[in-house]
Amino acid sequence: MTDDDATPRGLSDEERLAQLGYTQVLARRMSAFSNYAVSFTIISVLSGCLTLYLFGMNTGGPAVITWGWVAVGLMTLFVGLSMAEICSAYPTSAGLYFWAHRLAPERSAAAWAWFTGWFNVLGQVAVTAGIDFGAASFLGAYLNLQFGFRVTPGRTILLFAGILLLHGLLNTFGVRIVAALNSVSVWWHVLGVAVIVGALAFVPDHHQPASFVFGEFVNNTGWGSGPYVVLLGLLMAQYTFTGYDASAHMTEETHDAATAGPRGIVRSIWTSWIAGFVLLLGFTFAIQSYDGELGSATGAPPAQILLDALGATAGKLLLLVVIGAQLFCGMASVTANSRMIYAFSRDGALPFSHVWHTVSPRTRTPVAAVWLAAAGALALGLPYLINVTAYAAVTSIAVIGLYLAYVVPTLLRLRRGAAFARGPWHLGRWSRAVGVVAVAWVGVITVLFMLPQVSPVTWETFNYAPVAVLVVLGFAAVWWLASARHWFLNPAHARTRAREAARAGAPEPADP
Image 1 (cartoon, rainbow, N blue to C red):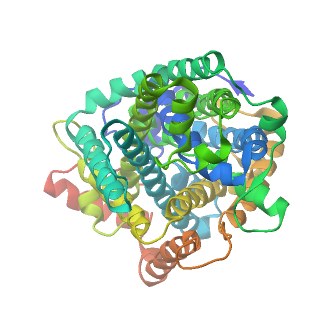
Image 2 (cartoon, one colour):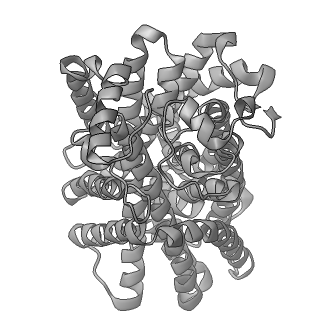
């Protein structure tokens, strides 16, 4: 790969953004490290790996948890490399749907962008829901252990709503605090993984043998096909590797965006790949009683593993480290989600777009978009009140929505071939091979994670991911055919909106 220093044609960040059709409105105050920190925080191995560890224990067990992480991490790196190359060429917070618009054939460009954007919004909202719901589950487990708090679906939803409220408030009133906490989060995760794994390696008197960690297969799904269960078990790892498009969505707030954005995407993936592997090995080797921890009253096997392996005091302290990481992760997810909503509504693509793309004059952040992100995440989590497998469904929705949005620009870039105008960060002669692998992998997981996860399939175990995806796709399709195809990303319509906004005194994008 090639990593040059200059932005395209020597332009400044603001000039390049204007060249892409947008006026600088958001405050550009993030460094390359801060950009990376947002994506690393949203991937959050202490969130994704551990909140779906129960799913992994039932769906393939230790062997799939371990080897699935290795395989999925490699495939995700291919997807991320392909995205990073395009991010370098088009560093704007609009991100994926803007890339699709620039790379698609002119006659169908707006349609490609429209549906890519809607999948991205769906995935972003689902990721926020998955992260903060996982944090609520672990917080409930801690409260149960410390104070005898009885964990019920209703109480978990209340904790979930409270965490979303906290993250909404932080992103509304504590913008500089959020930026600082994102940087702190990187070290919290790195040191947290090191401390937890170190404690699990040296404190317990008993560890599982390597044959257990790398070869023990467990199937509690009700399905009789081992290969099918192995494939389903990949969800734990694939869900963890989501949200790194945040580096693209934060480019309008990042210095040297054409190189910092791509670096943030790729670095967040490979560093998380290593950290997650170490973390999963630490927990799986430290399992004291598989059945006992699987059926823990806390509802969170990693919490029980910490208690059984380290004792009550140390286990609870390290559980707080995990919860802290999950709260960092959710906060960053709301930030990135709101930037996607801001950018998409800036182009008029959401109902009531004029509300969602308003920017606070005090903080220069999209406050309305922050609260839409939080409200949408809460709505996706509510089915947990009646569906015991709802959390796995939310994570499936996140993977499907995001990865469809991730891969469409790569597919279009492959179709464009040598006509693709590279940015300063690119893959050179490896571009096509990496892109082909990325597209193939996303095709596999898109089908896979829509399939039933538990047998028998009932209303209580139904995987509602296909329903959510089809509802959003159907809504977007109807709106596109009825109206949006006439105006979305239409330069004449953009000029009209710009004039109206100017009369109202609000900043708007330049002509796309």
